[in-house]
Each structure stands twice: as structure tokens, then as C-alpha cells.
Length: 356
Ligand code: N2P
Image (cartoon, rainbow, N blue to C red; front, side, top):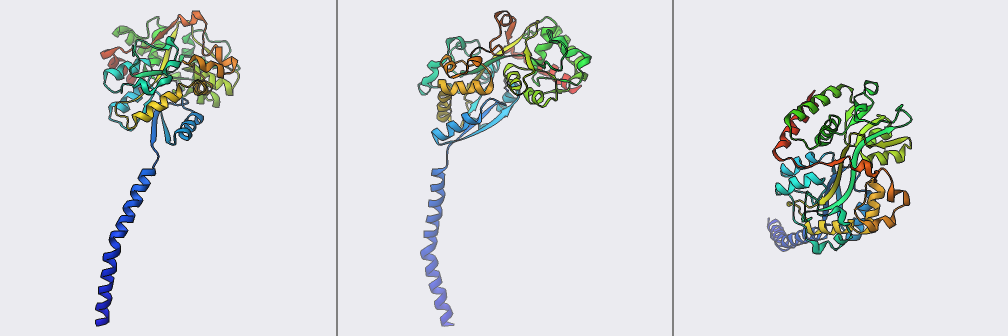
């Protein structure tokens, strides 16, 4: 009995002595690990926009983790941020979406002192209508929308958007899954502006796309995947994606139909809710280094806004017609613009088309 109580006594003493020490070790371990945990940069961008090389290059140099998540349309990006997504440090809206996001108070102002490489950007891509002083955005790439087609399968080179209404190509082509771009095709075919706010013109464009719907194989923004796989022989798509597909399948060509089309600048912005704004500015500065920017063009096959990047590019990428259309084609292009309240009508029309 005595023996037992002695043991209890010493056990208690041992516990008294070591429990605080245990807590101390645990606390040290937790804090230590947390201190060592790498910062994480979360990027939300278009698919095919941030290469593994760019991602890991930044990770290695800055000792951080970079996570890349993708979207297929500006409206998806907006929906996510408006719904309260708060984890993103870097986003890449196109021009007109930058105006919308500024208006919605979703973007953080950039601190230029942290982005000295801003000076590498060509003035041609600065001071645009969507962010006149570039307080919120830096340009990432530029491009156009058009038709990519496999010249070994499509009998004659398409000249007009009307080829995408030709029954002969039923189930053999895709359209962008993008309300402004795809309505834009119907507007252009009907001879209207892609920025029209005339309800009657919108009604006609909607009818046109509803009429087309049964012969469309798929609405997909990542058209390059369909083209490379041979799932489609034509695609309404963006220039860089067409160019990337052509690199895999050399019979693929790209045309901007005679009725005209859209052009865009995609940008890099920091959401107001970004958890790591400083790191995001370091990333933007990194992207604007000429040699890094050249890698963006080499990978995405979209144009560079950093003239010094061209020295690091193979000659064909410096002036390729997929990136630099001839002057007369350039004249037929329009920028998509924020049309304020009318946007809801575009969305409603688009939902009706997709619901058919
Ligand atoms: C890249 C998509 C380009 C985005 N796959 C067009 N704004």
C-alpha cells in the first residue's frame, strides 16, 4: 500500500516537472514550423498563360511557393472575386474587365516603387481607356480573336465568320465559351459593333447564335486542346492559342475574318483582397524583366509589351503574323469595352443561347 502511494507521489512529481516542458517543446515546434513555412503566391489566370518555367523560376529565386489556378472567361474571374474569393494575389483580367473591376473596387493600387521594371513597358500599351494611368494594371500580353483551322481538312481558307454557320462543318468546330467574344462574332457577321448597346441588334445576334447552336461541337475557351487532339477542324479562338496549336499541328492556320474581330490586352493586377501584396508586386516586377517576358511570349505565343524582350526571342516570334496582323486587318479590329448596365443584357442573351 505504502509502496503504491510512493509511486503515485513520484509519478505526480515527474508529470509536474515534464508537462510544462512538453508544452514548451510543442509550442516551439509549432512556431518554428510556421516561421519556416514558405510564403505562397496564388495566381488566378487564363489557361496556358503561366508556364512551369516562369512559375518555378520565381519560386526558386524568391524562396516561395507559387500556385496557379485557371479560368476561361473574364466573367468567370469577376464572378469568383465578387463572390468573395480572397486567396488570390495575382489575377489577369483583360482590358474591359479591368475597367469593371476598378469600378467595383476589386483592385489594389500598384506601388510603382516596388515595380521598377515598369519602365520596360512600351508606351504603346500604357494609358489605355481601361486604366488611363495604369494605377491598377500592367499589360501582360496582347492578341486577337479569329478562326483557327486545319488547312489539311478545311477545303477552302475561311474568309468570313459565316463559315461557322455552314452545315458542312456540323460538329466539327468549337466556339469560345465567352459571352462578349462569341456575341461579338454574331455582331460582326451582322455588320454591328462588338460593343453595341442596341437591344434590337443584340436580339438579332442572339437569334443568330441560337440558330448556330445545333452545329457547334463545343463551347470551349481552351480551343488549342481541341485543335491539337483533332477533335475539331476549326475553332473560334484567340490568336496565341491558334499559334500554340499550329506548333503541334503545322497544318493549322489562323485567319481574322473580313468582317473584323476583337483585339485585347490582358493585364496583371492585384486584387484588393490579396493576402500577399508585396510578393505580388515582386512577381509583377519579375514578369517585366526582358528575359522573363520573352519566355512569356515564347510560351503563350501572344505578343510582348516589353520591347527589350524581343532581343531574347527567335526572329519568327518577333514579327509572326499570328501576333502582328497586317495593317488593314488591324483596322478591322475593335476593343471590347465595358458597357455598364447593358452587360446584364449580354449575360441574359448568353444564358439563353447556352440553355438551348
Ligand atoms: C490564353 C487565353 C487568352 C485570353 N489561353 C484571351 N483574353
